[in-house]
Length: 223
Image 1 (cartoon, rainbow, N blue to C red):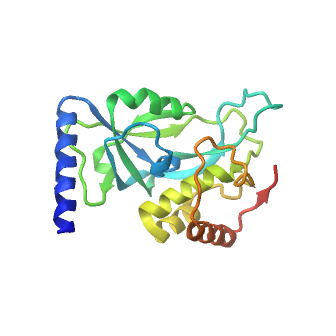
Image 2: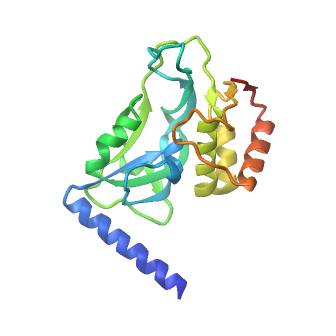
C-alpha cells in the first residue's frame, strides 16, 4: 500500500511540475555543493531529485570577492564547478518557482548562473518537464590566485551531509576523492559555525565524515 501511495504522490508532483513548466513558472538548478543539502534551501521549492551532470568537475577555490574588511571577516574558499568535457559529478536537481530565482541568485552571488544542456543531465527515476530551463552556478575567478584561504568546516559539513543523504556512502566517498584542491586547509568552526546555513550532524554522519576526511589526509587549522 505504501508503494502505491508513494507512486501516487510522485505522479501528483510530476503533474504539478508539468503545469508550472507549461506556464513558464518552473526552473531547476543543479546543486553540487551546499545546494545538495535540502536543509540549507531557503526558498519554498517545488521538489528535488538526485542527479548527475557531465561536462563539469568540482574544485575548491578562493572566494572571488576579497573586498571584505579583513578585521571583521574571514576570507574562505568556496566550491565551484569548472567545465571539463571528460568529467561527471553527482548532485541534486532542485525544481523551484521562477519567482524564487532572484533569491537563489543572491545566495549564489559569487557565481554566474549558466544553462545546462539537458543531454548532459541524468536523473535518478525522474525527468525534466518540457519548458523547464536547468541551470548550474559557476564561481567567478578569484581576484587573488596565489593566496590560500581555508575551507569552512561548517560549510563542508553541510555539503557532505547532503551528499551522504542523497547519494549514500559511495557518493560521499566520490565527492571527497574526486574534488580538486582538497589540500586546502580546513578551518575548525564546527562548534562555532561561521557558515550561515550550518547543519547539525547525526553521530553516524559525523563519524563517517571524519573518518573519510582523515583517510583523505586533509589538514585542519584553528581559528
